[in-house]
Length: 294
Image (cartoon, rainbow, N blue to C red; front, side, top):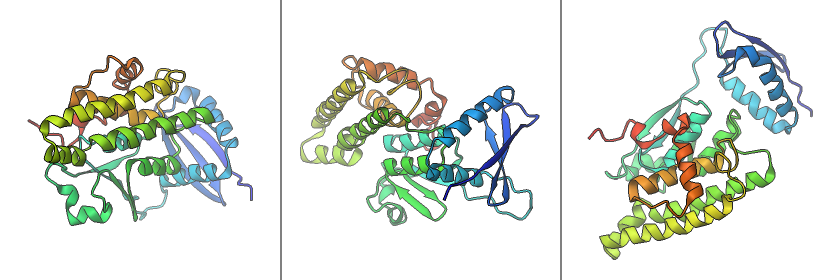
């Protein structure tokens, strides 16, 4: 059945804030949207409506669900929805990806530190969240999601603000490819378990050559993939899914392994651009509550 949505826009006295109402099944929902310019709110809102009008009904339903989650109830006695909980380790690039996504979408969350060096990921309580014993894990009410890719796609479908995938199908595919190169062909080969195993079975001197080989192979593939697609960021002038995976991987390669970026000019340029994005800056390891003070 077609979904009919009636929306009315009006600006508040507070600059940078816009409210709109949604009439759904006869119920009026009040929603507060941040980062709108009241002087140009009407044009921005018309653009949003045009975008919504071009989407399938399931995406409109997703938008409505997001709006419902942001309702300011006019009646008292309603409990606030539970805050998202992110189980994270400051240096984990997989956790870093999810922190960027949460920041881009403006989602408030509770940071639950899991110290990988102390083995807290093997504690029985954490293994209930992720039997693999890896971070991150996201808890949203009764829903528990482990694996950064799954978490990011869950957030993308539930919270449509700041879309992480472009509408263009080719660019969308490039985003998936870049994200998968990082998540399947680079990061797993340099994670803590693998490096500890190499040190145990081969020796500590074998770790860095191993890391450099696999980072270099992945970065070379990314350079070729992004050559005809990169703009300010990986696939244009907006931060999309690929950037969420690239930013932590490049940052970690440089900071943790002192990896030489000379042969990878596109990725080196992207790294500089990423460090200027507030959502990425605030997701950096050193900005996290579990980052060592000394």
